[in-house]
Image (cartoon, rainbow, N blue to C red; front, side, top):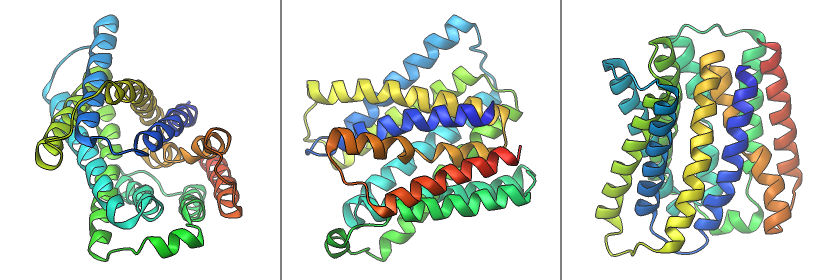
Length: 284
């Protein structure tokens, strides 16, 4: 079931990536957007927890939920900042390679076994991300990777990996899923407001921002809910890695809705991602 939940998480992420892409096509405030998403995220899981009567606050839920939320919020903000200087293709490639950090952290701190199929799956995952993210020639000339932002992207990637590991730690400590995820959303709101105050304080709140935030917030609720269920049922190195393959959904949707070209690189990346999921299925 863990792999199925991870695939559901990546499906929501694939649609949300398209929403992010549409939102970023015009100059709109990022901080307010993140803050609104965080509010929707928090409210959704508080209501879900009330409905399921699972809102049991303890120190593990509060601490690990705050750590995961802070890592997630900071990782996304660093990614946004790095994208402005490096271009989306390069930035997203390095960011998605957090799956390597996840594999190492899971092996070192969660004592997850590194079997042949897992190693093969991780190696294939790296190749899938690299192939899918290879820029076209026109983007090569437009975006020069600023050396100092390599470190920023690596830090963002590491933080995203720590978020995934935190989800597994929360499961092992018996934290309330709904309250854990609601706390994550609180940190997104706080980080978004801080980003807005520091970088975008003159940007106005509009109906368009609210609409995008509502749609993205609901999609992100699906992402994190199914990711949490995935790590509850499978190793973090498997669940988190598979959940990174949102481009399996984003790419076809981009071709249909945004008339993007389906290149050989993208086709190869999608194929390798499918092979990676097969390897992880064999590693069960």
